[in-house]
Image (cartoon, rainbow, N blue to C red):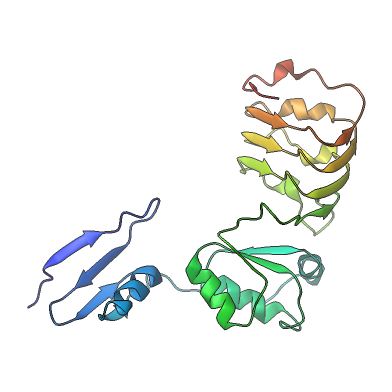
Length: 224
């Protein structure tokens, strides 16, 4: 038979994944999710790779050392896990957490010997950011470089120090800013009012002091 009996698209949200299965028990899949699922059901699946990856040839050592000191590193694919393990001087000795987006990524992390796993990026019970909110210093990028980001969700961590004015730029397109439930102190910077697109601003449960800037210029804001 040259054509499959059925051809269906996956109903997985935000993704379009296709499989083809034949009566003789063979098939093709575009994703490891479908490949694993169909293999468990007795099919002999051929994985069709729709993209290629290339190993990183050079990593800025300053940025690498900062990353190695982080409590949590987020990875979204098996190839990203492999790249991270290759960068670790001693993978078995690294004590940080790996936030895995998807079970396939988590499975790859386990196979490579990583044990401190947090599935699906769920860090609700893990205080993963400690110290000041990072802003850019020379070659080390900070949160202020994320000008296309829509959400700053940094709540329920152990952030301390003041909210740096450099964190907010007028060309940002942020919608939600969550800095609540940390140990931030000092005043709220005046230039936060430059964030015209922000609709929700959460700052409670910190150690902030001083007057709150006049937020009337934040025309999209409806929750503080």
